[in-house]
Image (cartoon, rainbow, N blue to C red; front, side, top):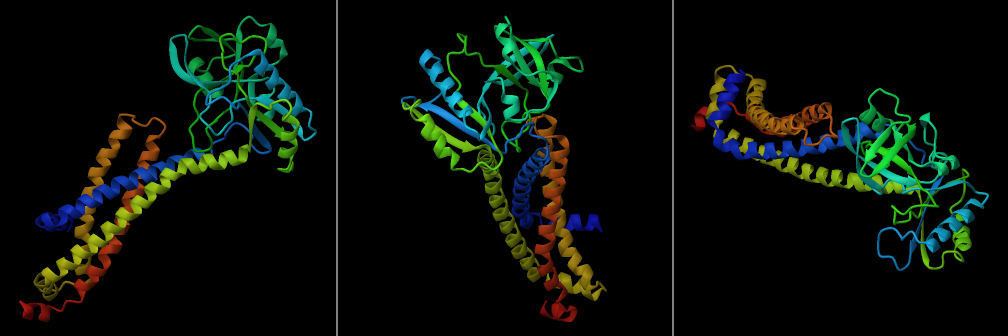
Length: 398
């Protein structure tokens, strides 16, 4: 039966060619959209590694600065430290730290090496109490403290993923990562830190301690504050804080936002491409469905005699309908197989390392199911029209 359906589809390859091409393009678009959605779904429920509720982000920016960070001048350092002191004085504030805000791509990037293992990692400079602000889960070692002021080397706290990448199953504490002219010695390990948000894969990441007393190698000055507030603090607290900071930072712009709102905005920015792709895929599927109905309707009209002969020879209405549906299923199968061969190349050559092979497989299967469902639904009405052809009427017309 399958061989017969393949032969019928091949004999009408000219009529099915454009339809098959539309199916192929639609299948590829569906695979991309479904794979992206499944990839987002797999990472969404993975732990972020930090707490964002009841945390506000406060950004200081000099009014005459177009972009980037302000210079690490003595006056700027005094202003930033005074702003931190004032914020810490509010009773609504539990703890404050300097750190580039989560749910963004801020921070630096650098190559590091240890014992022949070389990889790129992200980093940011932070102050001593960030672990309490973001409720980081310290799994080994310690966080930064005032005792690090006397060190001749630079302490860092790394994520568990970075520790495994560079040190394997060994103990990372006390080991040094060579990064350019720096020697970064690990003093602590945190569980996770997906700073770009719940739809981003975790990267290799480490924290470097911000020193107020020396920073010749760092010409810029971080000015992003993360503030953990008492639960239930109203938004009206922002007005009081701005009023208190105004005398100290008259020449600075002040931007305030909750991490919850940053999280929502980050989610919206990441899924907007998914929404756009979904609209395109829906349009393509509608075009394929309408084209399929038109082609099969024309086939029923042109193949009245063939249908009449089949009915006269004993074929049931179900068998006639299954023939028309089966032909387009064959065309859909060719499109799915060819599209699958193209998509497999992405996984084989690891063009998108963040997407696991299992996600590619699930995306292909889901896309094939959607395509087959569309084809079967679109072919039902023309197939039903074919079952309405009476053998005598069809032969009489010929």
